Amino acid sequence: MKPRLNVLWNEIFCKRCVLCVEVCPVGVLSLERDEIVEKPGCIRCYQCERYCPDIAIEVMDEGNRLSS
Amino acid sequence: MIDRSYKDLLKMRRFPHTWCPGCGIGAVLKNVAMGLREMGWDYRNTVIVSGIGCSGRMGGYMNVDAVHTPHGRPLTAAEAIKTVRPDLNVVVLSGDGDLASIGGNHLLHTARRNPDITVFCNDNEIYGLTGGQAGPTTPKGTKTITSPRGEHYQPLRLNRILTTQAPYFYAKTTVYHLNHFKTCIHEALRYKGFSFVDIISDCIELNGRRLGFKTAHQMFKWFDQRFHIVEGVRDHLKDDELGIAMKEADTLPKVKVEVSEKPEVSLKDLKPFSLEELASFDGQDGKPIYIGYQGKVYDLSTSPLFQGEKRMRCHLGGKDLTQEIGIAPHGEELIFKFPIVGRLKE
Ligand SMILES: Cc1ncc(C[n+]2csc(CCOP(=O)(O)OP(=O)(O)O)c2C)c(N)n1
Ligand code: SF4
Ligand code: SF4
Ligand code: SF4
Image (cartoon, rainbow over all chains, first blue to last red; front, side):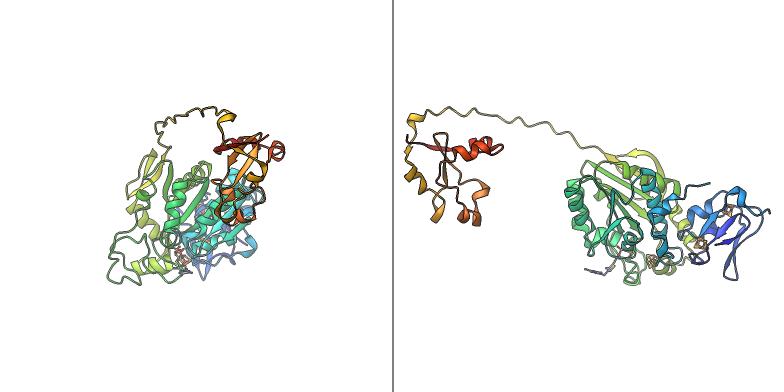
C-alpha cells in the first residue's frame, strides 16, 4: 500500500485500468510512470474507492492524511 | 469513512483477482459482498453457487461455502441446496451466457418454481471467457468475433421473459449506476422468492475494444446513454429502463372441492375372508395386496409404496396388521384412504 495525499494505493492489486482517474470529479488522480499519483485538491468523495473493481484504492481516514 | 468490513467476505489473500483491468465483474463481486454484509449474511448461513465463465469465477473469491457447477447449472444446484437446507441463504453469481444460454431452460423453470434464491447475473452481453463470441444477450447489430458484420439475431429479453408469470422479482441495473446497483442488490437479497438481478457490465477486453472503447469508463458512459433509471417498483421494464419489476402472485379464485362422505359399509354385507384366504393376496404374481385391519380387509395395491420392485419384497401383504398399524404414527389415517374389499372371518 503506497500512501498518496488522501488515498492509499495498492500497487499489487491495481491493474491500471484508470477507472479511478476517470471517475474522480476533480481530476486529481493520474497514472504516471505506471503508478497512480494524486495532485492536491481531493474533496474526499470516495468515488475512486467505490468504483475501483480491484479494491486497490482507499481513501485514508482524516487523521492519517498527509497534509496537502 | 466507509465500512470496509465487507472484505471479510472476500478471499483477499487470493487478490489480485484474475479478471482483466477494468472488468465489471470485480465491481459485481465487491458490491454483492457489501450487500451480504449489510444483511448480516456470512459463512455461517450463506452459500454461493457459480457456473462457468469469467463471471463464474466469482464464487471462488467469496469467503463462504461456494459451489462451482458445470456450465449452465448453477440454478439447479442452488435450488437443490435451498430445498434440503431452507435455513441457508442461497445466492447465485454467474454470467449471462451461463444463466440464459446453456442454462436457459433451468432459468425458466427455476423462476417458475420460485424458490427463495437470489441470482446476480453479470450481463456483459458477450461470452467473455471463450473469447468474445456473441451470446444470448448480445444486442442486434453488435460486432463480435463470431458476428463480424453485426449480430444477426434479436437478443433474449430477460426483462420480458422473467416478468411474464407472477410472482416475480426482476431488477436491471448497471455497474456504472452504483447507487441504483446497490439498491437493487439490497432489495433482491431481501425479497422472499426467486429474485434475479440483471447487471449490465463491461467486458472491456473482448467486447469493448472491438466496439471502439479504450477504457472501462468509456463503456460506462455508453451504458448511461443506452439506459435510464425509472423510479419505484414497476410491473414491467422496457428494454432501455433500469429499475425493479416486481409482482406478487396472482390470487386465483379457490376451486371448491366437493368432499363426498364415504358411506358407512356394514360389516355383514362384505365378502368374508379367512386368514388363509387373505394370505394368498400378498402381491405375488400380479395378485392384489390385501391387508386386514380391525376386522376389515383393505386393498393396498394402489399405494405407491407397493409398486414396482418393492412389491416383490413386500412382506406385509396378506396379513392382519391390526396391531402393527395401531403402533405406527398416522398408520390409521393412511389405511382409511384405501378401498375396503371385505371383512375378516371371526
Ligand atoms: C458444457 C460447456 N459448453 C461450453 C463451454 C465453454 N464455455 C466456457 S465459458 C462460456 C461462456 C460463458 O459466458 P458468460 O456466462 O456470459 O460469462 P462471461 O465469461 O461472459 O463472464 C462457454 C461457452 C463449457 N465450459 N462447457
Ligand atoms: S480503479 Fe483501481 S485498479 Fe483501476 S487504476 Fe484505479 S486503483 Fe488501479
Ligand atoms: S476521493 Fe474523490 S476527489 Fe479524492 S481522489 Fe478519490 S475520487 Fe478524487
Ligand atoms: S474477458 Fe471480459 S468478462 Fe472476462 S475478465 Fe476480461 S473483461 Fe472481464
